[in-house]
Amino acid sequence: MVRTPDKLNISRGQQKMTDFLVSLGLVVESEKKIGPYRVDCYLSELKYVVEFDGPFLHHSTPQDKKRDEELKLLGVKKILHVRAASIDEFSKLMEELDVLG
Image (cartoon, rainbow, N blue to C red; front, side):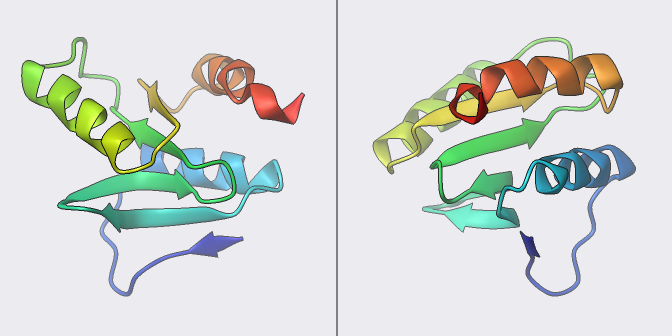
């Protein structure tokens, strides 16, 4: 099940990732606001954030690391980054969602 705010403008890759997570039976909150941040996908039952970084982002910035640290202080247990909407990346994501298997 997907819970989304009205009038989302998300990329195709993020939509594919969301659809994949939903196909696993997870409740996904798209564009969830946590503290001052908006995250791509929040898996509320697990307290995980899944961020779609897209195929062109090859490194994280100090701001991204700081944001991830602050999200953890706000109660997020794990932050997973998906680099592209491919089967390989989704397979890696599946491995990271260790609570499923």
